[in-house]
Length: 132
Image (tube, rainbow, N blue to C red; front, top):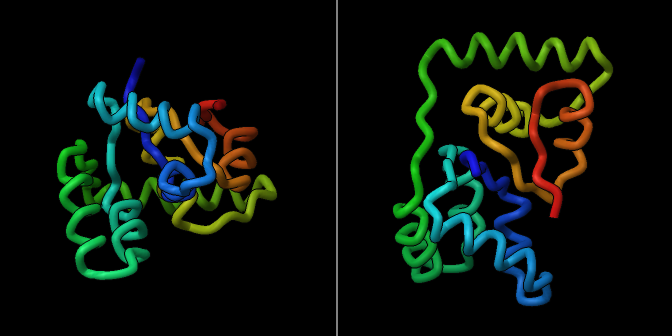
């Protein structure tokens, strides 16, 4: 399998005690197979939602084992163009979701998510969504 970006919504679902075991297993398998690309925005969203410093440090340590995805300065112009194209096609979604979608497309990474906005983007672009 190619690389995978796990959206914050899917990470949170995998951490939730009541989530499906199969969903948790998929995330663990991706971690063990070293398939995950971690954009800084997702890392930030995850870390800011921690309940205390201990949880922050524990999660931060786990995330350090993943492949961090860096963006270059010219990415921002491509993101502006991509976001504008989506808007002209009637797709209005949060900029963070647009950012993550373009990262997936440009890095040939599939996306694991629990956010309807990505399905909207995928219908009009080459975004590859993992179905669980």
